[in-house]
Length: 419
Image 1 (spheres, helix red, strand yellow):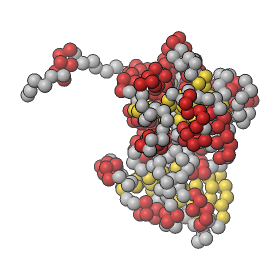
Image 2 (cartoon, helix red, strand yellow):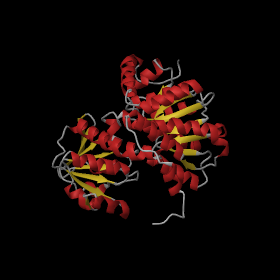
Image 3 (cartoon, helix red, strand yellow):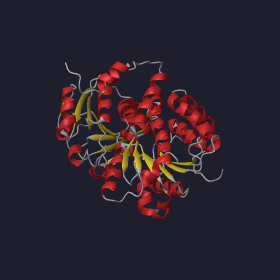
Image 4 (tube, helix red, strand yellow):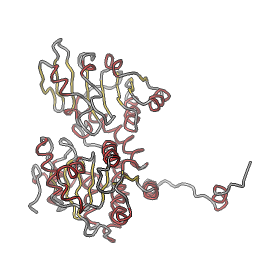
């Protein structure tokens, strides 16, 4: 295979071993792969996937490939690629990959265009960069696209905006909306992997630190839970009164970012919005503050604003850039403001990605079977897929649950029964 761009194919054997290790923790996807290999439900479909190139993603790509799909993979973030995994996909699984960890923006979009050169029938996105590039720069390919899937909160927001403007040219399934995705991937995956990335990058003790979390969605909830478990004093900032109230009732301090900036030791953004930590916040932060992001794009922290304020910038550890302000205060940005859990660590554990990628695989199968009947808008994952994934996960964990009796079913479906 000649059509690929990875760092070093000599790393392929190590990548293959890590892919196989992750596969041990992905029993649901393994069951789907076994069925796909027999039934080949994706035969003849060209799939362009823009996802984090990790061991878990490799198992998803192999599942689609064995299901009959002609798959190509590119990175959804310049810092999230695991180069040994990319090499293994090319060398051992014969799946074209265009991704190199640390690639610049020019190369990043060159790789997205290379994936689109595949002329996909289906898009699989993590942040909607592939879909937005397709709609802006490669509109000639749109007639051949029957549908897509989207993995992240940020991407779903972008796609719903496109649909509202009448700009979306094909149906997309919001995998992020599945309960077996955001309840577990966003909460337990982001919670653990973000802490992992921060600790790997800094080697600091979290106990006793003021740990500020911007956003109390599912990712923020999971991160708050894990930070508190490590002994940190958790502070939450929000713009929505409902999750703000929930954070208060969960026992966390809630305040504005202007207030939190004065006392925080560690700051993490998980909102999906722009300039959540801005110049005025940097002006208030204490010397040594650590700032990072676990939302999809690196726009949540106003890094250009910080660079304009700083008199010096230097790399003090891998993935830790120190900005020195004119008054001598030092502010540390982790992972260039990109996803810290993938920039400095390995992303979510395989056991939670098992459910997320099971949703991707089954949603892709659903799209292939039903795209002719779907409108050009964003759809939630069908409830039967969500429940089937939950059922398979429980079975893999050896957990049994009760089944309603016929009498109980009749009672629940009746309006005539009273007290």
